[in-house]
Amino acid sequence: MCVYIPYNPIHLPCITSLRAFVKKKRMSGVWVFKNGVVRLVENPGAEPLDGNRQGSSSARRKVLVHVPSNEVITCYEDLESKLLSLGWERYYDDPDLLQFHKRSTVHLISLPRDFNKFKSIHMYDIVVKNRNMFEVRDM
Image 1: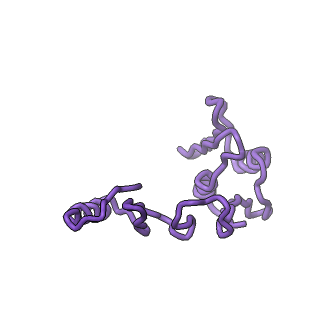
Image 2 (image 1 turned 135 degrees about the vertical axis):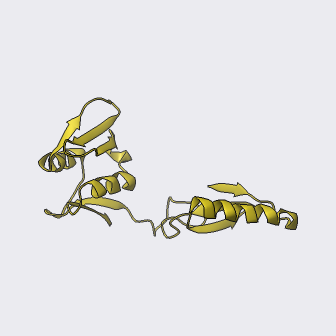
C-alpha cells in the first residue's frame, strides 16, 4: 500500500486520517517514508527498505517440507503423492490450476500449474489445511 504525502506541514491532517484508516483496518507493520511516498511494509525483515528484492543476500527462499519423511517438496508430482495419501482428491476443472479437495472438509487447495510460480502463500495454505504434516522452512 502506497500513499503520496508531500513534505508540507499543512498536510498533517492527512497523516492523522491515514493513522485512523490504518487503525480501523487493523493494519500492522512498519511505515517507510521514501521520496514523498509512505509505504506499509507488513513484514519488515522479509524485504529491504529500498524495495529491491533481487540481488539481496539476506533474502531467504522458502521451501515446503513433508514433516513425517522430512522431505523437501521439489515438484508437484511429489506434492500430489503426499496429498493423495492424506485423502485429498485432484480436481481437473481449471486448466490453469492444480486443485485438490478433501471430501470430509470444505477445503480446496489451488496452486498455479507452473511450479516456478509456487510461492510461500501457497505453501502456507497447504500447511494450514494439513496440520502437523507440512512445514514451511527457510533455506
